[in-house]
Length: 121
Image (cartoon, rainbow, N blue to C red; front, side):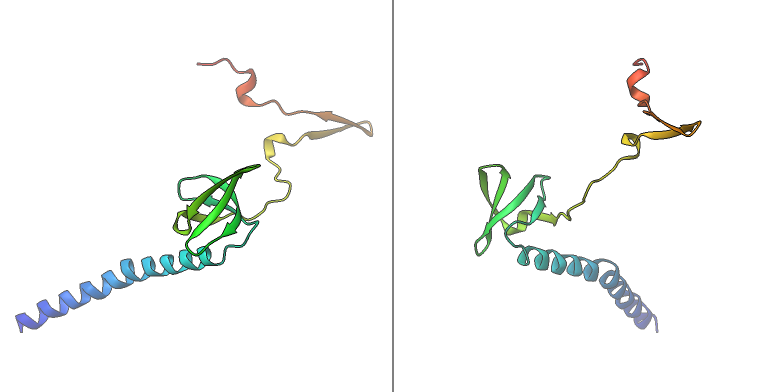
């Protein structure tokens, strides 16, 4: 009876490891490979090392990236970390002007940045 319970515990541990570690890792690898195979010319990407670039051309396992106007480098597809989605007109809260209304006249006031006027410690 004791032999069966230890075998059941080992089998249960294998199943738990599969569902918690192995299966999610395989899914991430498949998604990464699908993303790398779906690259097209003109796509903005970030490499696994954090370099931002635009795809210029694609060979079998290589990708030609433009990192600056006129500067092209050759990378392996596996070095592509993620595809960047274009964001139109990102507005940061601290860059927005607040508007105060006084006697039906619009007066623009600019919010000061906290680090601009405060002395350094």
